[in-house]
Amino acid sequence: MRVEDNLKQIKSAIQEACIKANRKTEEITLIAVTKYVTAERAQEALEAGIVHLGENRDEGLLAKWDVLKDKPTWHFIGTLQTRKVKNIIDKVDYIHSLDRHSLAKEINKRADRKINCFVQVNVSGEESKQGINPEEVADFISCLADYKNINIIGLMTMAPLSADEELLRSCFRKLKNLQSKVKDLGFDFAPCTELSMGMSNDFSLAIEEGATMVRIGTALVGQKSQED
Image 1 (cartoon, one colour):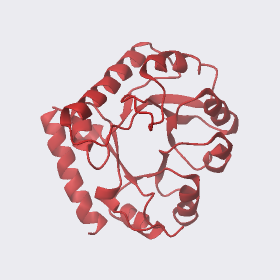
Image 2: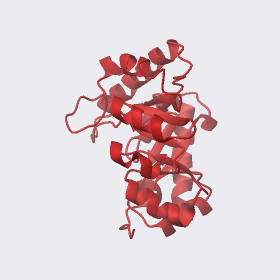
Image 3: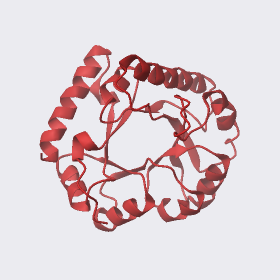
Image 4: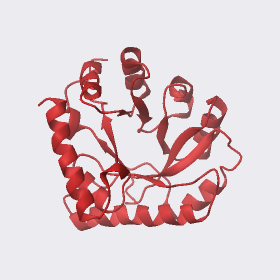
């Protein structure tokens, strides 16, 4: 299907979720995750009216940057190796996967402006998932006060690949509660007003539980083999 047609369905689902949660659709930022598709398909997403694109590998982001430049608002959403920060830092607007001090130090060192970062939290406790333990988030964030080029705008998580609605909702609620607690700390460098959670299979539930940014790939742009 065309991205434009998929987008209509996604927008309808977002609107329905917002109605259920008594929220406004303007509160939700849709990120098209283009990691499995070509730059041409990403260009189609832009032409359909999508503003935000997400990549989870530096190679994929750089390949699409060569074609699309700064037309999109770029989000880096995957695990970021410290040694690869220098490759993408001047091209991204958001990093969704800050999960360790060494990475924070490198981002702060390499950036020439404030970078909006999400702290990735392993809410589900799965060993296969990246992210900080929920109990360690507040202490981790408090240690970032001296990093002038990092702005902690929120928290991010990846829910389990599960059809159990209550399990998914529980993960999203935990992150929402944690985000509220961090926000209440009142850190200038960590306003923590945003929640990056929800993907193709669970974004409606995530929105109902408080997501402000949803990361949608397959349902929006598909899974065509990348030709980078």
